[in-house]
Image 1 (spheres, rainbow, N blue to C red):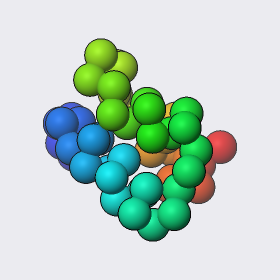
Image 2: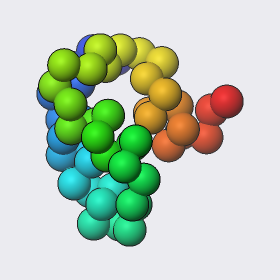
Image 3: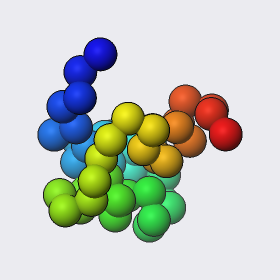
Image 4: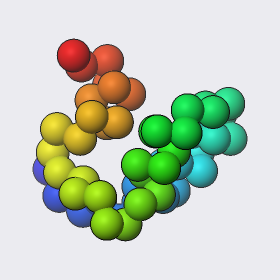
Length: 50
């Protein structure tokens, strides 16, 4: 499994294009200073994990 989270801004764009308007989600994905790690709450949310 890759630990490369450099595509998070692309994920934000795709989510927005799909109709996501949650500012917390979009901002988190676009913020390069956020610590994106395995278990990221956005990724877990998208995967349906609690």
